[in-house]
Image: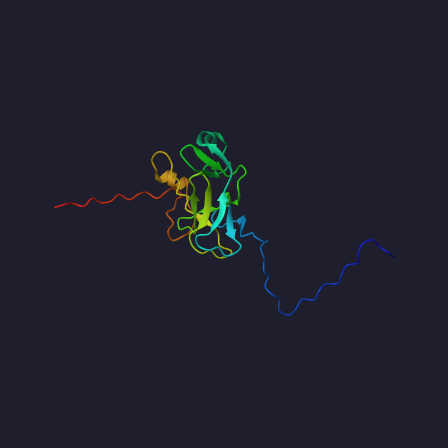
Length: 184
């Protein structure tokens, strides 16, 4: 009986020792968004990234703070979670509107990256140290809120980075007052 469909091929016999699976990233692709152990999604290195290397630009629609405050939360169940990146006193980049994978980079108190802001309002994520394939990218958000920083607000912006430097919050560290030296 003739058929339009090919016959099922016999199963291949596997060798005694299997070779490890090596995932080769597509040409030019150095990072990937996937599930994170820190929070939701994260960005991970697919290839080695050298210290000082620019990894990605934080992009999105540039809007005013006033416009940003009128928008509904990016994640309704987490009203303090946004994809806004402060660029000056009047503007933010809304990474949720046309943004790059950079919007998924999580916070860490002991980061391996930093946000480098240019004079023209662009933001680039750069490596603070060498980053190995499989490592999650992160930078210190250093969030600054208007008003008094309380234990309650610190908890609302809780950090789960797990680094030895973890301060328990994504809010900027409190500035320590310098002791005045007494002159004799």
